[in-house]
Image (spheres, rainbow, N blue to C red):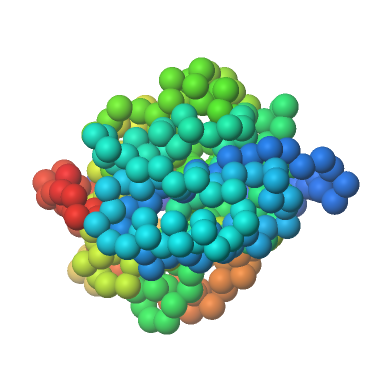
Length: 372
């Protein structure tokens, strides 16, 4: 038993130290001064939106692009249809006929998948600045302005903040707190000029550098285009920056059912075996190991009286650093109400992590009518 306690202590100390670095990094990048964009020249930019069965969301996305604080002559929107079986294409064509902004609709024929849709959209684009988002995203009106002013000659890729739209209930709070933690780690680590995470819902980069990097990966995964592209940019030593501003936050829809949520997380987890970035592998490993250790801590506190105080201290240390990080990140995103669910989410989270980890190694999942 003493060896298990020593392992739990060491893992907790490593985890807490790692999260302290994340917290410090997030505070620093949050407090950075940003460019005053009011008098800067607007650049030409191509917005790529891959779609598959998005008839419920695509119009709101296009309307958000139409309402940008940006000259409509300085950007184009390229919607790439990935074999939709609903009314997505009709919705886009109807929008094109009734609105003035420059929207082009293309459809994949032989190839399938989000990465293929993005690749095709980039090939059809007319400008070097590429911005990507998803059809179910809500875009702030200064989104394009922020991208074009901060993706400059010194920056080859720009990472932007993404958060879930808030709903009521435990499932919503669980997803929201999980996303807040991901955003905290993404931008906290980014502060040390060694980014490990990105999100295609708010990602922009140079088309020239994209092509020089060899485009997207060839892994058989329906997601991961953003992280694997980030890895490619890092391998080429391209300049990668992040912009943490309130008028740059992209909101995306969360899953409404437990099965939908678990299926989404299986999809996310499926790509982890292809990661090559050592720092990303480190953070993924220490988070997984720490949560496995938490399962032992939870059962050990009532069952192993001799070490119960030590286990309680370890639990409090883990919860405290998590709460500090989530408080900082939720304050930036103005989502502090989700912290009311902090304790129940913390109790459930280790079991969720272990289940998803095991399931991702053994279970197939479905995404938009396709099985993987």
